[in-house]
Image (cartoon, rainbow, N blue to C red; front, side):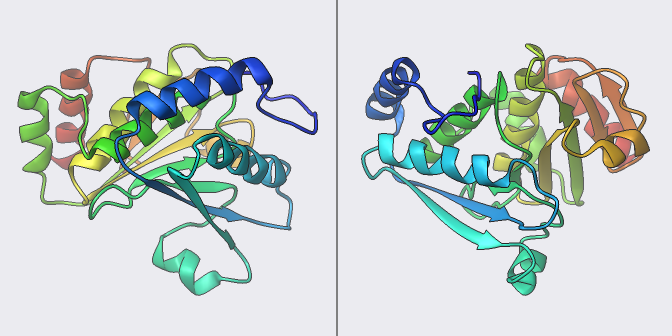
Length: 221
């Protein structure tokens, strides 16, 4: 989905499709937690508006809890949020599903699919991978660097987010590389998707979930 600088970010054609998805696939209510900032955040207002429009389209199934990163520093620290815009999708006891940057372009559907999972309380991971993920007892931080025009990025984001949904010890961030260039540069992001696990293990590309799991295990070894 293309994000345009208009008064209405989600155009009518997309609104109809989105309402169909919400009506048929959201099995329960979903809450999104949004942190924005008034300081050097080009897409904070657009992200806030995008989520508000989605909540309106959902007919009450989606709610958005909005916070100010600077004014509510203690709350941001509790959620371990250090930049904006930041979207968190709670999933059971897990608060590890995160978006840093506006979920535009191909990442819009990643957000929608994450919301569907959250409403169902289940993921689409294979039972074998799900079982292995749940055995992890150490903290894992996954960062998936993306751009809105990358068609392969959503697969990497979705896999990472489903890992976080299955295990509260895992935090998985979608990071829009062009919005956080310094962070992207620090991990030498030259192509996307680039996945960085615990700051010491990385790979590029969208790979099968079992191969992704192998990289997580490698980072923990």
